[in-house]
Length: 437
Figure 1 (spheres, rainbow, N blue to C red):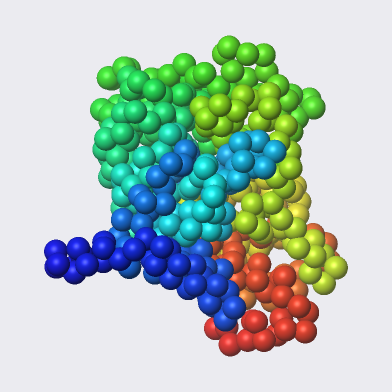
Figure 2: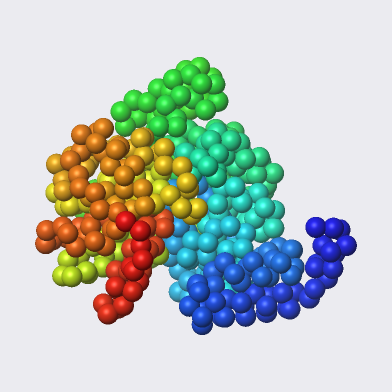
């Protein structure tokens, strides 16, 4: 773009750019093309490149980034801050549109909100932080993901490091249990709040990200590196499972109950990260923690759909770390459909299938489904996991014996299946028609 054309676009009145964006979103919804969570921002940015900074001015913003858990944690931040019963309305990219156009759309949709909670893709973090200048940045975890788009995890970590370093006045809430995050954020950084959020899959941090030496990881103890001295920082926040559920702790105040209905240890960690972020904005955990109990479903994740008399729970997976979190919440003995697509939104590269922990599938009734069912079948075959293959996930469900089912699905398989499961019964044949098998 020439400097002249750029200057002409900047001079377009902000009201015109934002109005055009909102009109595009309404039109998209009326035509059934989409929810408008991207097109509004894309149109507004096309007319006014500085629209994000203009819309963010005067707002206090929390930005959530990381490989896994962005959508869930951002929803938890919104719940913790309390909305109308807390600090007021909150602008939020609730549908998970986490690039620049999605952030613009979120702010357009809530023009009077003085608070914003935005999940942000790691590769778009620099652009969005420069425009938004958030009060808090939450860094959840960093691991391999969509190698064809995102690149190797250390390259992503270096990008996040440069971005965070460029904003020394921003509070960073960071996961002390992830060595890649600690290396990225910098253990010596000022204005960092360390959280013992927990660590699951360690395939990218078996060696020190700083020096390459083997990390010392004692069972249930803090990790450290004998080569360069990088070690787990002392956390200010943590969670603990109890006989009644879980509690959240802080070094300066007594622990409180964590009434979380989202399943799994990973979500306990996400919840504590959200509470630390809310506390940084002035909402203490004794007020924020009880509000998390109202959240039971996050953009379709963890929700249950009744299909032909059976309860179907669809869980999102997209990389080895996310898979580890998902299999942690599988119901013992329940059949599992694993639906793997490799479209643009999923990432074309399915080599990550070879890093999956397949042990939790042993002894279950398993069906390989999705566009890449054959690739998954090869992986399961090498792992000696007995399975059937049916590329269409809905057909796979219908072929299973009566009873409840868990589905693990990549992004496009997740959204497609959720749409087909929730479509009116009379239209399901049409929704699924023409799908290759």
